[in-house]
Image (cartoon, rainbow, N blue to C red):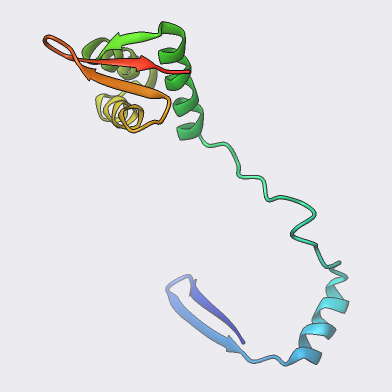
Length: 114
């Protein structure tokens, strides 16, 4: 069974196709689709801007070795162009296995651990 839902302009579409194995085989033959062995080719996840920013944020702390929370947040905000996005990266770094966060005198200290 194959269900297609959506709209065409303002008209809602809800279409259900019931196909048996022979129907699928005929459709596959018409499309000339070769079966894909999923175990032979790993699915590549496209790199998103969030992934790229995450990598840059980790590299920034790795190169610095240690930064105070406010200094790191300031750099992350500059990197992302947004206070909210900078805070999200800071929280993500806090929970990263490669980062150690300790309470400093006034602010937390973020350290990269190898």
